[in-house]
Image 1 (tube, rainbow, N blue to C red):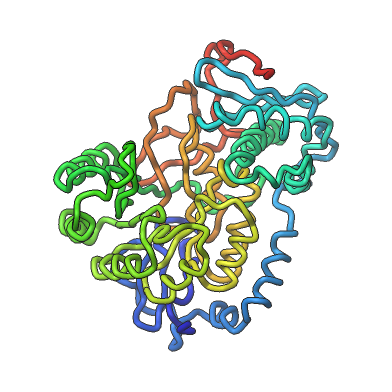
Image 2 (image 1 turned 180 degrees about the horizontal axis):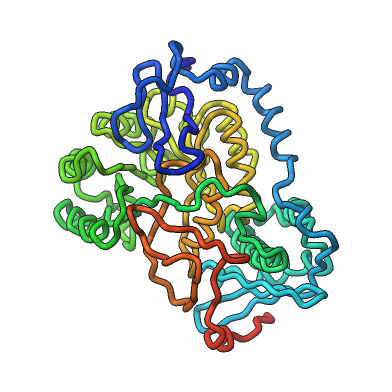
Length: 449
């Protein structure tokens, strides 16, 4: 491994996303927003002092530091002078819409909107997650989230099968606690570093011919006032039963430079392979991304093949991002400790909530890396994501955005809920900061089996 291969991701933008973050490298600095590097952000060795000291630690010593970070609490328990006992946790359904409602013994209430996948996972919600929360003090949410993985051998399920039900409950509890304390979800789990969150438009279309793919991207970008774009490279079998589908030959190699030509240097460009490539192909495509000043390369190989991820990272200057599929602190620890990734991407739904995701962000920050949380969707997924990003001092320059369309009617008095100048203002009201239409909620019925 080249000891100065990419160096430190500067947190110069911690006080506001307007200041883009920097990746320093022995072969030259590369910005995560895909633009020209800013001079003076690294020393002669290609690192900031903190990064140089961190690089001096071997992976084992790094692991020790990361374990210590994981033991540090996230929820601000001091905001609640007396216990908040959870009396009920309910899953409510109307057609394909699922809500979670929690109540305390003193009548406080919180609501969350579940991820769409809960329609296949609700038995785990009812039998493996819901019972563990009843009677617990919500102020101990950090501990509850740790112990629920042990309860009933829940670690045997893990991944999104456990993460989505768990996040659904956590979001509702944070909404309830925020309403009790009169503060936003973000203020419960950290300090607000980003009152506005800059977004990138997330696009798919990889199964389409090049011309149609580009046209769809143009329409998606034009719909919102965004200054960043993430594309899909490679060709997974998307919406097809053809086992031999590989996509148009050479399409990715044409798409990457074409989009840089179309949007110029002012647009931040990122690329995601969703694990499509093997190591050699990932390195080849990664070099093409470097040539065209893309900001990072997400999931170049399968997300859980850590040795392959590290081989790709060692061979390239472009930052490697990984983690949306991940389910374990152990996986993130290994990749961070072994310098296999520069950008961590826990999904707050898949990974089991905001508190667990904040801990991943803290681990990344310890060794000068960024966090760009993945947003898997759900009825109000973009809202949970921007609350999470708002408290991450080492958040990346832009964050996933899949549009404001939702079937959940709500009112927000503290944010226009629009992309303005490439950013969305984070709600500042209590809890989630929005009020879901009471008539919509009344349509939902209790799920019992």
